[in-house]
Length: 172
Image 1 (cartoon, helix red, strand yellow):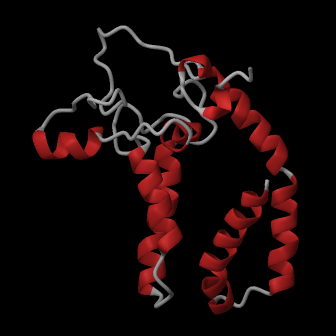
Image 2: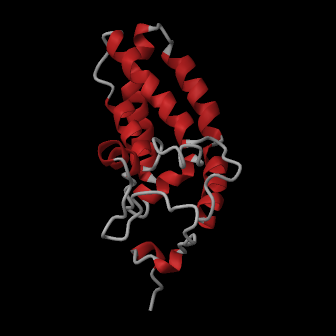
Image 3: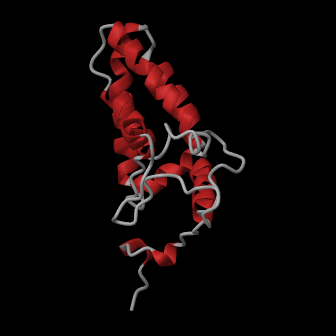
């Protein structure tokens, strides 16, 4: 839970110069942040429920990888052209989304909870980069998903019990 404060601090610090330049009153910002953050636990519960399914990120997405990528990517030129500090958080977010499949035409419309493939399970999606360089996707030798499966390939469901991670290990 402590890291949630840090993530919010990152967001505020990366936006502070823009807020100051646009004349946003700090108390108004805090009031709006408080209203938004009150919904965070419920939003996380819904995301966690969706993530546990690990089946179909494209089914009824709440917000897609592409939508979030477009949001963050659009901030980069705005911040750069406004003479504001380097948009590090926006670039970081775009990188996370790209490595989760946001540039892959088959995955771009997946729900943003697909970022767990990278952040939770350490599966880097490189299809878009490799396809641009070689003209085709490939499979990662380490078992991570690098390209979308072909339409005729059987889908493989990954369950938490299949993952060797301390979070999913049973206590003796």
